[in-house]
Amino acid sequence: MMLFLRTLPGIRGHTITLGKIRFSSTLAFIEATRDGKVSIPSMSAIHAAQKLKNPITAIIIGSHAPGIAKQLQSSSTDLGLQEILVAEDATLNTYLPEVVTPLLQNVLGTVDKYTHFVMANSSIGKNIIPRLAAVLNYQAICDVTEILDATTFKRPIYAGNAIATIGSQQKLNMITVRPSSFSITKQVQKNMISPNIPIKQVQTSEVNDDIKWESDALLDNDKRPDLTSAKTVITGGVSLKDKEHFESLLDPLANTLNAAVGATRAAVDGGFCDNSLQIGQTGKIVAPDLYVAIGVSGAIQHLAGMKGSKVVVAINKDADAPIFKVADYGLQGDLFDIVPELTEKLQEMQS
Image (cartoon, rainbow, N blue to C red; front, side, top):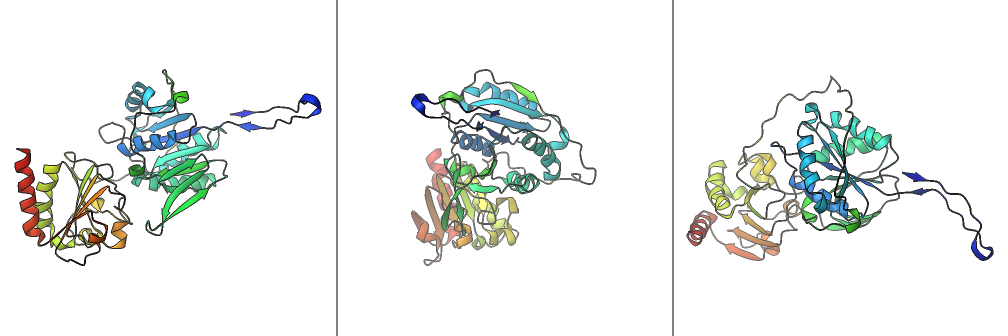
């Protein structure tokens, strides 16, 4: 929204010049889970958007969009949304960047309304934001861990060993936020609450026939918390030897603690588990309340993905393993003896 004002006679001989004023507004991208709910990373993205202290509009795409819009509408006093945009189209369910970008380009590029665009730094966000930023000719600011104000952001660099403070004077600030850095909360700015949020339909763009979704193969992990938002994470390293030991040792412990299971890159490369479980610089970033590293040496690339954990427990046979330098509690010994005993003791405490 733009407001144009003219030069007015001043008070006591002074001239007051009022120029063009552009009101700030944020568009937040909401991801859906496969069962039609708001994803936890997207809830964190909304919380991050609140810190910009702008009016927030949510945009939801895909066949589940109307149902999710109703969910957000009923939670309006908690989320501080002023408007919800819905693009109901099954072709958008897969979040292919080639399909989603034209839609977002139409929303952001043809209306001089939004000063900020916020997404979670999830696999979907990492896929979409580079293409969208390039098409709109803006520089994306990715993996933001702290919002100081509407134009100043912090993000980790050099595998998390340094924090960069970025000041932006772009007309449109396009950012992805690290979900673990913006905890979900029910607090919002009071002036942002709107009890009756309007839901508006967005016209979808024509799909490029050259791009199509062939298939997917996802892990059936519905019984466990999402890795990036879990309060407890059990991570296995290459010392677990093989896939059979990885599952037989970690799964019972994870089930006992209602924890998510993660892995180092070496464990993933060794075929112990799917690469969606990889934690580290080239994997997922986690910051749980409790992080249990089993047979994890503690390479700098792995530490970059879990250094935000509140309490770290390390189990390793090597007393000189780097993981012990960042651990709050360490158990030196054979993990094949320690983990089964630890699981048994925890199960006895719960019974």
